[in-house]
Image (cartoon, rainbow, N blue to C red; front, side):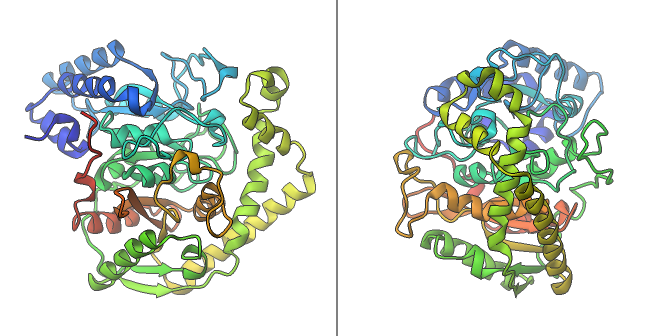
Length: 467
């Protein structure tokens, strides 16, 4: 018999609506799973407990009275500790923000609650989501291995089955990296698709908020609940939100998929990742997709352009925090904020101009080849041991730097990017493949990803020894 915590959101939601299980049962099993795994995984910084139980009871009462809020009704989810919550602290992983209460909910939290989701906790993040300090979260597939970037708490919670869905943020890959390393699905939506109101900022023009789940269908359901225009977010775009479940099962036939090998399959990509992603490409071609080799020689400029913008915008956003409470910041975070204050205005302006050109180059590439998406490795390697972080590989490159190189193009261009599991390394760690789409065309990414997912059992596998 399948444990309740192993159900997908779609399966659990169906059983909830039919009255076969209750939200109270799902929530209690999830809280028990958190209790059983947190001493090793450390995915959560705040656990709701009684608040989650009360919310689940209310969802069950609503269902019994005929009020059904939708596919997330009664589903236990986790949110990253960058999102403001009226009923719990929002500390952004920083001692400098210890005990901070906003008194309001972030827009995404508002929408989750309105959709009937039960929030079970807030997940661990790197300090200020900068990704330079070392939080306690560990990878459920190997507790001595790296769990990913600043949304690692959300990714680890999903892999450990201590949440059915989770919210992450992505400024330079921090949804996709932990999703890939923890063997789950993660989407960085189109810039402007999901409101950032009430989300602790890092870089105003690169920050994205998005869903993380254990299946493609669940990711589509979660995006459908949180997406939409919000005038409180200056970057929000008034674009209609489609029904992401419509057409999601159409398969690969007729899709045009671009592959840029010079950049995304360079020397930093390890053989297990290369083999797994090449197998995906072959499978898609056999199933009716048209695979087209493309060349984008400007891709190496993405990381320096993105990092220049990130450094300057992060330091501008946190200037007061640095000057007033800098002594409470982790030393590595403080150094990065101080470094950002040294970026000349001319460098920032030139980076913004270069970004506009890079976005136009990406647009022309899609248009010239009639592409529906680009396909690439999500990361150049599976996870690495914690003690290998910062240690150059045989090419003289740091694992974190090479990860950013593959992730940053989607942040710089603002295009949607979805990672899904596509295999495992010989030593049993997950590998992800990334699909990057046209603006506001997340639905096509879900379509291709689901067609691939249905032919494999990757999402049914779970880390051993957690129960």
